[in-house]
Image 1 (cartoon, rainbow, N blue to C red):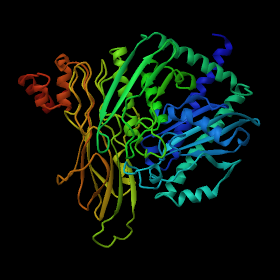
Image 2: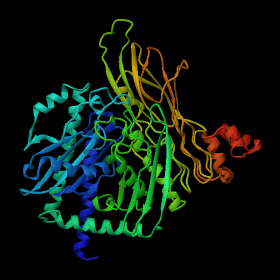
Image 3: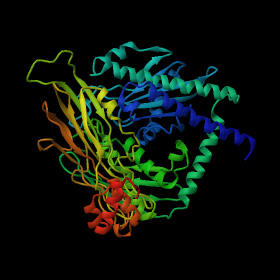
Image 4: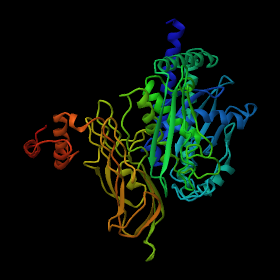
Length: 567
């Protein structure tokens, strides 16, 4: 490697650290719990043509990979001639941003010594954007909240106060949302400062040289990985709950010499409810699935993502057309990787995991004073969003992860942060025994949650769940994960999706799904079975009936646990 290449490699690493600092700054300064607690965000740096050079490690694939395409939309809409130092641009356009109105994307041009050298961009999921609120009930995107087209939030350093007033007047939590917008703008500014420091240190007039180095090496490394695969194609399919009726995702994955094409022809048509997924979000997760299966060690950028092509007929559930409702596009998008894996497993066996919980097990509660008596003193309405996870699927040689978000990668919100956001009480949050699919490698466990309101309050809950009727399926003989359950504590039936009223004093009981198993359960190591039993991951009944553990061995484990010994 030449000395110039060594320097470029150092700069590449520096860019990755810069955007990670950018993301961490957003985590520290954001107002919404979805950002500061769950990490539902992304950050990246781009060259002057809008091609992504580096992305932060912190963030979700759906945001980062979708945002990789969105900067080009900003350049086209704003116009190259209208890009000035001190500008900040904004949008929440689902089709030119990251898939739904609840994601605010902000782009800031970066200038060095008066020359435009690139862009910084970041995205964050905000708790409220007006409209019906975060949920699947809308019949069109117009009902789902305020729409901000690609425009200037700040023009040469001056914030557009008219835009701020319009946004404040259309949302339930104006201080929180405007605070998040300023946090997004500030984290872009931090990225710009660190980039300027790097360019000063290395005496760079622009980013053309380092961009060329990044793209050439990433493209070559990715194409080498693809070239090593069989030249063939395979189909994958999944059936999901949908809103009122099941929907099907279908994909054909074809490996060419220099690219992989994922074609979603045959997938269900658009839904009348807000679970539709714009193609930009489908593409983000389809690319992610193949990237982690084939070349996980190659950093994400425009060149490493380019060989992964994604197509889908318009007006299907994975390529929704405006003005389709798309608020819960993640309900579909988070199942795209498992659908792609189901196809890729037929091309290269024993690489990808079994199916997992897939989409996040989110819910949002809209709390208000109970309606059958006067409001208590100081009572106010609150919107509380919480992110939660089921279990991930078992991998070819490792158990699945318990209550872990795959593929989104967001973190579960702590109970304390959730309860601080409004008069909500999380009465129960614990792992769900026997929910991981049986197998040589066990699926990850889901979790139980029990949710209510403080005395004097009632609430609507926006359920955003799937796998009620279609649990995760195992691979290579592995068992299915447990299905999702939801009901009120008095047994009142509740749907997996949609806004539902919960009266004062009632609680919502939820059991989130487990990941599926990998391989035949009879091949599971006996010490792993005993360990699962000791930890409470499986019951004595499952240990005996599914895994064949003897009654004597079960008694021995119980004795060790009673003594406080380890298995």
